Amino acid sequence: MTQWTPICRVDDIPLLGARRVARPHGLDVAVFRNDSDEVFALLDRCPHKGGPLSQGIVYGRSVACPLHNWSIGLCDGQAAAPDEGCTPRFAVKVEDGGVFLDASELEGHAVGETRPVAGPARRCAQVE
Image 1 (spheres, one colour):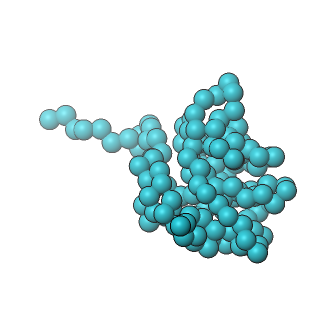
Image 2 (tube, rainbow, N blue to C red):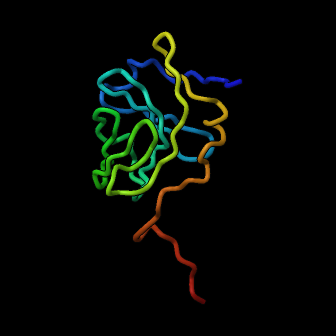
């Protein structure tokens, strides 16, 4: 049986926006709300270059990544063609105006995913 963790109220999520949920391990989860008050949850990472989807613009049942405008489906995390890739989605439940996420998914789903490291922030092994 699924154990649901309360996250927030639907009204706490900006209309056509998102709210981030921190996890003890792994990247944050982004909880989105569209203009029909539907609520979705995805890992807060675009499959393209790791952009924070929680900072994107929600339209219909999609979110536009703020880095390169990839369109990611909120129902399944799939990038819209011609782009390819998928970001993990999380089970979400709305009940009496409250938003709940699956506790076991928060603990262990997609915890190995990371953001890409590029440029001067990348650490290279020192040559001796």
